[in-house]
Length: 327
Image (cartoon, rainbow, N blue to C red; front, side):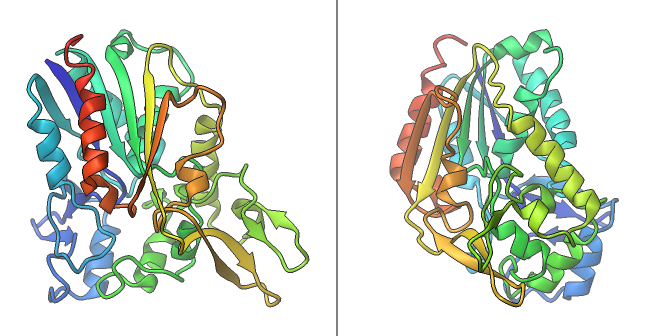
Protein backbone atom coordinates (compact mmCIF):
# COMPACT_ATOMS: atom_id res chain seq x y z
CA UNK A 1 0.00 0.00 0.00
CA UNK A 2 1.15 3.51 -0.78
CA UNK A 3 1.42 5.62 2.38
CA UNK A 4 0.20 9.21 1.98
CA UNK A 5 1.07 11.65 4.78
CA UNK A 6 -1.03 14.84 4.83
CA UNK A 7 0.39 17.91 6.60
CA UNK A 8 -1.98 20.86 7.18
CA UNK A 9 -0.95 24.50 7.50
CA UNK A 10 -0.85 26.87 10.44
CA UNK A 11 -4.28 27.06 12.15
CA UNK A 12 -5.15 23.78 10.43
CA UNK A 13 -5.60 21.67 13.57
CA UNK A 14 -8.05 22.11 16.40
CA UNK A 15 -6.58 23.24 19.71
CA UNK A 16 -8.10 21.78 22.85
CA UNK A 17 -7.83 23.18 26.37
CA UNK A 18 -6.98 20.70 29.11
CA UNK A 19 -10.62 20.70 30.28
CA UNK A 20 -11.71 19.56 26.81
CA UNK A 21 -12.94 22.93 25.54
CA UNK A 22 -12.11 23.69 21.90
CA UNK A 23 -10.20 26.97 21.65
CA UNK A 24 -9.56 26.80 17.92
CA UNK A 25 -11.33 27.11 15.60
CA UNK A 26 -14.27 29.09 16.95
CA UNK A 27 -17.36 27.03 16.23
CA UNK A 28 -19.15 30.01 14.70
CA UNK A 29 -19.07 33.78 14.44
CA UNK A 30 -21.53 33.89 17.33
CA UNK A 31 -19.63 31.61 19.70
CA UNK A 32 -19.94 33.08 23.19
CA UNK A 33 -16.34 32.51 24.38
CA UNK A 34 -14.75 35.87 25.07
CA UNK A 35 -11.55 36.85 23.29
CA UNK A 36 -9.28 37.09 26.39
CA UNK A 37 -10.28 33.55 27.39
CA UNK A 38 -9.48 32.17 23.94
CA UNK A 39 -6.19 34.05 23.73
CA UNK A 40 -5.07 32.97 27.20
CA UNK A 41 -5.93 29.39 26.37
CA UNK A 42 -3.86 29.45 23.20
CA UNK A 43 -0.91 30.76 25.22
CA UNK A 44 -1.28 27.94 27.75
CA UNK A 45 1.35 25.25 27.03
CA UNK A 46 -1.04 22.58 28.32
CA UNK A 47 -3.40 23.29 25.40
CA UNK A 48 -2.89 20.55 22.83
CA UNK A 49 -3.83 19.84 19.20
CA UNK A 50 -6.86 17.63 18.64
CA UNK A 51 -7.41 16.80 14.97
CA UNK A 52 -7.11 18.27 11.49
CA UNK A 53 -9.96 20.70 10.85
CA UNK A 54 -12.39 19.08 8.45
CA UNK A 55 -15.16 21.69 8.41
CA UNK A 56 -15.61 25.20 9.80
CA UNK A 57 -18.28 27.88 9.85
CA UNK A 58 -18.41 29.24 6.30
CA UNK A 59 -18.16 32.79 7.65
CA UNK A 60 -14.73 32.19 9.18
CA UNK A 61 -12.93 33.34 6.05
CA UNK A 62 -9.35 32.23 5.72
CA UNK A 63 -9.43 29.33 8.17
CA UNK A 64 -8.50 26.06 6.47
CA UNK A 65 -10.90 23.18 6.15
CA UNK A 66 -9.45 19.93 4.92
CA UNK A 67 -12.34 17.47 4.88
CA UNK A 68 -12.80 17.26 1.08
CA UNK A 69 -9.12 16.80 0.25
CA UNK A 70 -8.66 14.26 3.05
CA UNK A 71 -11.65 12.29 1.77
CA UNK A 72 -10.30 12.40 -1.78
CA UNK A 73 -6.84 11.15 -0.77
CA UNK A 74 -8.21 8.55 1.62
CA UNK A 75 -10.59 7.30 -1.06
CA UNK A 76 -7.83 6.36 -3.50
CA UNK A 77 -7.53 2.60 -3.95
CA UNK A 78 -4.24 1.23 -2.68
CA UNK A 79 -3.59 4.19 -0.38
CA UNK A 80 -3.29 4.43 3.40
CA UNK A 81 -3.74 8.00 4.62
CA UNK A 82 -1.83 9.34 7.63
CA UNK A 83 -2.86 12.71 9.06
CA UNK A 84 -0.22 14.81 10.79
CA UNK A 85 -1.85 16.52 13.75
CA UNK A 86 0.55 19.02 15.29
CA UNK A 87 0.83 22.06 17.51
CA UNK A 88 1.01 24.86 14.96
CA UNK A 89 2.11 27.36 17.62
CA UNK A 90 5.42 25.63 18.15
CA UNK A 91 8.81 26.01 16.46
CA UNK A 92 8.76 24.74 12.88
CA UNK A 93 12.06 22.89 13.23
CA UNK A 94 10.75 21.16 16.34
CA UNK A 95 7.54 20.15 14.60
CA UNK A 96 9.51 18.90 11.59
CA UNK A 97 11.09 16.43 14.00
CA UNK A 98 7.66 15.31 15.15
CA UNK A 99 6.61 14.90 11.52
CA UNK A 100 9.66 12.69 10.95
CA UNK A 101 8.33 10.28 13.58
CA UNK A 102 5.04 9.88 11.68
CA UNK A 103 6.79 9.51 8.33
CA UNK A 104 9.08 6.86 9.82
CA UNK A 105 6.02 4.89 10.94
CA UNK A 106 4.45 5.21 7.49
CA UNK A 107 7.71 4.19 5.80
CA UNK A 108 7.57 0.89 7.63
CA UNK A 109 4.43 0.05 5.64
CA UNK A 110 5.48 1.09 2.12
CA UNK A 111 6.52 3.96 -0.12
CA UNK A 112 5.59 7.42 1.13
CA UNK A 113 4.12 10.49 -0.58
CA UNK A 114 3.82 13.68 1.48
CA UNK A 115 1.11 16.24 0.65
CA UNK A 116 1.59 19.48 2.58
CA UNK A 117 -0.47 22.68 2.57
CA UNK A 118 0.82 26.16 3.43
CA UNK A 119 3.16 26.11 6.45
CA UNK A 120 2.93 22.32 6.31
CA UNK A 121 5.07 22.54 3.18
CA UNK A 122 7.80 24.26 5.20
CA UNK A 123 7.65 21.56 7.88
CA UNK A 124 7.98 18.83 5.27
CA UNK A 125 10.91 20.57 3.59
CA UNK A 126 12.64 21.16 6.93
CA UNK A 127 12.30 17.46 7.71
CA UNK A 128 13.70 16.40 4.35
CA UNK A 129 16.37 19.09 3.93
CA UNK A 130 17.85 19.50 7.41
CA UNK A 131 21.60 18.81 7.36
CA UNK A 132 23.00 15.66 8.87
CA UNK A 133 22.87 11.95 8.34
CA UNK A 134 19.62 10.66 6.89
CA UNK A 135 18.03 7.59 8.47
CA UNK A 136 17.44 4.50 6.34
CA UNK A 137 13.68 5.08 6.20
CA UNK A 138 14.21 8.27 4.17
CA UNK A 139 14.57 6.04 1.12
CA UNK A 140 10.86 5.24 1.36
CA UNK A 141 9.90 8.89 0.71
CA UNK A 142 9.24 9.15 -3.02
CA UNK A 143 7.46 12.45 -3.45
CA UNK A 144 6.72 15.76 -1.73
CA UNK A 145 3.78 17.82 -2.99
CA UNK A 146 3.57 21.31 -1.51
CA UNK A 147 0.34 23.28 -1.91
CA UNK A 148 0.27 27.09 -1.51
CA UNK A 149 3.44 26.90 0.59
CA UNK A 150 5.19 30.17 1.58
CA UNK A 151 8.67 28.97 0.65
CA UNK A 152 10.10 32.46 1.16
CA UNK A 153 7.61 33.60 3.78
CA UNK A 154 4.79 36.13 3.51
CA UNK A 155 4.75 39.90 4.20
CA UNK A 156 1.24 39.53 5.65
CA UNK A 157 2.88 37.79 8.63
CA UNK A 158 4.60 41.06 9.58
CA UNK A 159 1.30 42.93 9.81
CA UNK A 160 -0.12 40.17 11.98
CA UNK A 161 2.90 40.08 14.27
CA UNK A 162 2.68 43.86 14.64
CA UNK A 163 -1.05 43.70 15.42
CA UNK A 164 -2.16 45.40 12.21
CA UNK A 165 -4.07 42.48 10.65
CA UNK A 166 -6.29 39.83 12.19
CA UNK A 167 -7.43 36.30 11.38
CA UNK A 168 -11.16 35.99 10.78
CA UNK A 169 -11.35 39.50 12.29
CA UNK A 170 -14.68 39.21 14.09
CA UNK A 171 -13.55 36.30 16.24
CA UNK A 172 -9.74 36.76 16.28
CA UNK A 173 -8.85 40.38 15.57
CA UNK A 174 -5.45 41.97 15.13
CA UNK A 175 -5.01 42.71 18.83
CA UNK A 176 -5.36 39.04 19.75
CA UNK A 177 -2.92 37.93 17.05
CA UNK A 178 -0.40 40.48 18.32
CA UNK A 179 -0.78 39.14 21.86
CA UNK A 180 0.05 35.63 20.68
CA UNK A 181 2.95 36.81 18.54
CA UNK A 182 4.40 38.80 21.46
CA UNK A 183 5.25 35.47 23.12
CA UNK A 184 7.62 33.88 20.60
CA UNK A 185 8.88 31.47 23.22
CA UNK A 186 5.36 29.97 23.17
CA UNK A 187 4.29 30.82 19.62
CA UNK A 188 7.41 31.11 17.43
CA UNK A 189 5.55 29.94 14.32
CA UNK A 190 3.95 33.37 13.88
CA UNK A 191 7.40 34.87 13.26
CA UNK A 192 8.65 31.94 11.19
CA UNK A 193 6.22 32.90 8.42
CA UNK A 194 7.97 36.27 8.00
CA UNK A 195 9.78 36.76 4.66
CA UNK A 196 13.20 35.16 4.39
CA UNK A 197 16.27 37.32 5.09
CA UNK A 198 17.22 36.94 1.43
CA UNK A 199 14.08 38.78 0.28
CA UNK A 200 14.27 42.57 0.20
CA UNK A 201 10.54 43.26 0.16
CA UNK A 202 10.55 46.44 2.31
CA UNK A 203 10.66 49.68 0.29
CA UNK A 204 11.49 53.09 1.79
CA UNK A 205 10.46 56.55 0.52
CA UNK A 206 13.97 57.06 -0.95
CA UNK A 207 13.66 53.84 -2.95
CA UNK A 208 15.95 51.85 -0.69
CA UNK A 209 15.09 48.24 0.08
CA UNK A 210 15.70 45.96 3.06
CA UNK A 211 14.59 42.57 4.27
CA UNK A 212 11.93 42.45 7.00
CA UNK A 213 14.20 41.17 9.77
CA UNK A 214 16.67 44.02 9.23
CA UNK A 215 14.07 46.72 8.65
CA UNK A 216 11.95 46.17 11.75
CA UNK A 217 14.39 46.08 14.65
CA UNK A 218 11.53 46.08 17.16
CA UNK A 219 10.59 42.49 16.37
CA UNK A 220 11.02 40.07 19.28
CA UNK A 221 14.63 38.78 19.24
CA UNK A 222 13.50 35.20 19.95
CA UNK A 223 11.11 35.36 16.99
CA UNK A 224 13.78 36.76 14.69
CA UNK A 225 16.22 34.04 15.75
CA UNK A 226 13.62 31.34 15.11
CA UNK A 227 12.89 32.78 11.67
CA UNK A 228 16.54 32.89 10.68
CA UNK A 229 16.99 29.29 11.80
CA UNK A 230 14.19 28.12 9.49
CA UNK A 231 15.52 29.93 6.44
CA UNK A 232 19.08 28.86 7.18
CA UNK A 233 17.83 25.38 6.27
CA UNK A 234 15.31 26.19 3.54
CA UNK A 235 17.62 28.64 1.79
CA UNK A 236 20.13 25.88 1.04
CA UNK A 237 17.61 24.04 -1.20
CA UNK A 238 18.97 20.61 -0.26
CA UNK A 239 16.46 18.38 -2.05
CA UNK A 240 17.18 14.76 -1.07
CA UNK A 241 18.23 12.43 -3.86
CA UNK A 242 15.41 10.20 -5.03
CA UNK A 243 12.56 12.45 -3.83
CA UNK A 244 10.34 14.06 -6.45
CA UNK A 245 9.43 17.64 -5.52
CA UNK A 246 6.20 19.06 -6.92
CA UNK A 247 4.57 22.39 -6.17
CA UNK A 248 0.99 23.59 -6.62
CA UNK A 249 0.34 27.26 -6.02
CA UNK A 250 -2.53 29.71 -6.37
CA UNK A 251 -2.56 33.17 -7.93
CA UNK A 252 -4.85 35.78 -9.40
CA UNK A 253 -5.67 37.44 -6.07
CA UNK A 254 -4.23 40.85 -6.88
CA UNK A 255 -4.77 42.26 -3.38
CA UNK A 256 -2.25 39.87 -1.85
CA UNK A 257 0.26 41.63 0.42
CA UNK A 258 3.26 41.17 -1.84
CA UNK A 259 5.53 43.72 -0.21
CA UNK A 260 5.81 46.40 2.45
CA UNK A 261 6.06 50.13 1.81
CA UNK A 262 7.32 52.31 4.66
CA UNK A 263 5.79 55.79 4.62
CA UNK A 264 7.49 59.06 5.61
CA UNK A 265 6.50 58.51 9.25
CA UNK A 266 8.05 55.05 9.34
CA UNK A 267 4.73 53.17 9.24
CA UNK A 268 4.51 49.95 7.19
CA UNK A 269 1.79 49.75 4.55
CA UNK A 270 0.56 46.94 2.31
CA UNK A 271 2.04 46.76 -1.17
CA UNK A 272 -0.45 44.71 -3.19
CA UNK A 273 0.54 42.24 -5.85
CA UNK A 274 -0.24 38.83 -7.28
CA UNK A 275 -0.67 35.80 -5.07
CA UNK A 276 -3.34 33.76 -3.34
CA UNK A 277 -4.53 36.40 -0.87
CA UNK A 278 -2.08 35.20 1.79
CA UNK A 279 1.14 34.12 0.08
CA UNK A 280 2.60 36.26 -2.73
CA UNK A 281 3.42 34.58 -6.00
CA UNK A 282 7.16 35.19 -5.54
CA UNK A 283 7.05 33.00 -2.42
CA UNK A 284 4.61 30.30 -3.54
CA UNK A 285 6.44 29.86 -6.85
CA UNK A 286 9.96 30.99 -5.93
CA UNK A 287 12.93 31.59 -8.16
CA UNK A 288 14.90 28.67 -6.78
CA UNK A 289 17.73 26.59 -8.28
CA UNK A 290 16.95 24.81 -11.56
CA UNK A 291 15.30 21.42 -11.15
CA UNK A 292 14.57 21.97 -7.46
CA UNK A 293 10.89 21.49 -8.27
CA UNK A 294 10.34 18.72 -10.78
CA UNK A 295 6.85 20.10 -11.51
CA UNK A 296 5.18 23.38 -10.63
CA UNK A 297 1.57 24.16 -11.50
CA UNK A 298 -0.49 27.26 -10.80
CA UNK A 299 -4.25 27.68 -10.35
CA UNK A 300 -6.52 30.69 -10.13
CA UNK A 301 -7.72 30.36 -6.58
CA UNK A 302 -7.08 31.66 -3.09
CA UNK A 303 -4.89 30.21 -0.37
CA UNK A 304 -7.54 27.90 1.06
CA UNK A 305 -9.83 27.59 -1.96
CA UNK A 306 -7.12 25.96 -4.07
CA UNK A 307 -7.67 22.77 -2.06
CA UNK A 308 -11.20 22.53 -3.47
CA UNK A 309 -10.32 23.62 -7.01
CA UNK A 310 -11.44 20.79 -9.30
CA UNK A 311 -8.44 21.08 -11.63
CA UNK A 312 -6.05 21.04 -8.69
CA UNK A 313 -7.80 18.04 -7.15
CA UNK A 314 -7.56 16.10 -10.40
CA UNK A 315 -3.86 16.89 -10.72
CA UNK A 316 -3.15 16.04 -7.07
CA UNK A 317 -4.79 12.64 -7.30
CA UNK A 318 -2.90 11.98 -10.52
CA UNK A 319 0.44 12.90 -8.94
CA UNK A 320 -0.24 10.70 -5.93
CA UNK A 321 -1.56 7.88 -8.08
CA UNK A 322 1.70 7.59 -10.02
CA UNK A 323 3.33 5.96 -7.01
CA UNK A 324 0.68 3.40 -6.09
CA UNK A 325 2.16 0.74 -8.35
CA UNK A 326 5.67 0.98 -6.88
CA UNK A 327 4.66 0.97 -3.21
